[in-house]
Image (cartoon, rainbow, N blue to C red; front, side, top):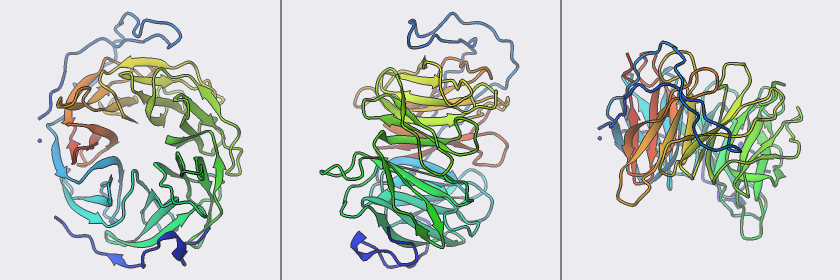
Length: 403
C-alpha cells in the first residue's frame, strides 16, 4: 500500500497542496413528559412494556429551532476541533466535496469546502502531530487531508487496494493494535469483481506509512468501533450482508476474530457504541428501517442480549449516543427521514433512564431527509447539541435549550 509521504500515482493522487479554507430553518418538539418505559426484546412482542415511573429528576429537555447551512448533498457528519481553537467544528461528507464548518464560538459556523469528498468522513490525528486530520473513503480505499494548522489541509492522495476502483461507504479510526497510532477501518460492497467487499483494516505504521489492508468478509457498512469486551482494544460492530448486526472482537494485535451475528428486526441503517446502562460496558444502538431504534445490552464479555426495540416511526437512518438532558445518563438521537416523499423528516430524541431503558421518542424537525446525526456541545454551554445531515442539501444545527 502506498504511503502518505509519496502517494501512488496509480491511485488517482492529487498534488499535495495547502488548501485555504474560505467562508462562503422551526422545531416541532413533542415535550409531553412521558413515564419511562422498558420495552420487551425482539423475541417477545409487544414492542413496549407498560410504562413505569422511575422517579428520576431531570431537566426539561428542549431544542431550539434548527439553523441550517447549505451543502450539495450530505450523507454523514462528524464533530471535532479542526483549527486548534478548542471549539468543536463540523465535517460533512457532501457528494464531491468535503464541507467544513468552523465554529465561531457561539454555535454558529463559517462554511468552507475541500475539493475531494465521499459518502462518509472520520476525524482524528493520523500523523501524531496533535492536530485532527480528515479521512474519507474513496477510490478503493481512503484518502487523507492532513491538517497543516489553523484550518488549512493538505491532500495526500488516495491509499487504495491494488486493482480496485470501488468506493467504500463507511470509515472509522481507532488504535487497533495498541501502538498509540490511529489505524483505519473501512468497508463497503466492493467493486464488480468483489475486490474490497466487506471490512478492511489498515494498520498505521507511522511516518505516513500504512500496512496493506486486511479484508474481513463479515459485512461492510455502516460500522462503528468501540471496546466491546473490556480488553482495551477497539472492536467492530457492522451491518452484516443479511441486514443483521455482526460483531468482530479484536484479538489484541489489530486483527479480528470471526464475526458473531445478532438478529435485529428490519434492515440496520446505522450503528453506535456507548455505555447505555452505566455498568461501564459498551452497548450497541442501531437505527433500523422498520421505524425502530434498537439497543443490544452487553453481557460483559463482548456478547449481547437480544435486541430491544423502541419505536420512532419513519425509516431511521442514523443514530448517536450522548447525554442530551444533562442527567449523566446516555440518551439516543435518531435521524429519521420522511416516510413518504414530500413529508418533512425529523430527529428523534429518546431520553435514557441510566439502566438501559428509554422514554418514548420526542420528534424535532431537522430537514426533508435527515440521514445522520452527531452529538456535541457546539456553543460551550455545557449541554450537548445536535448536528444533522439532510440528503436534500442542508446541515441542521439544533442547539440544546434544556433547563
